[in-house]
Length: 210
Image (cartoon, rainbow, N blue to C red; front, top):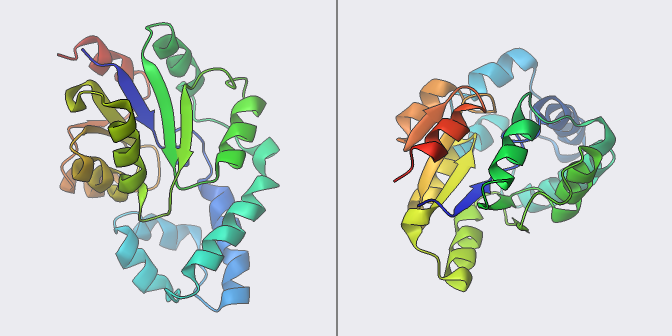
């Protein structure tokens, strides 16, 4: 029986894509990498994270600083960030089922907590943790090791290819959502256990979990 659902935040629960694009384009001037139009973003949604970095020309040496500044700038936008349609209702439904709900994200814990409060979900999650852009699997692994939970009782929910890869590296199942950053075809090509198009489909998966 499923006991734990771990969510990604940006692109899975919160619709931050346009805000992140705007902030990233502002930072591109400061750090000397390529800015991206909305049309180009649609094309990038078919690529994985490393391919996107190569396309943009971001220096790997500057990347940690870019990410820190991105998170800091995002903090000012929290009041304007909305959850995707149906997400709040689905989360509240899952909470009633005594399932442990968590968030493991590349965003900062401060940003996530502030956004949850803005959206009236401050008491919904049992835990929130944060890792680096390419180190999410390490955070998931540490949580699993601390809790000593059966891997078959945990699922990760995310919108990017790197979310699928992180879940697979830790041995847990993954549900990919098509309303976030990566395209449906890119997600499908990475072999998630489930690929859904609407938040309500999460409930159906949970109801049929064995």
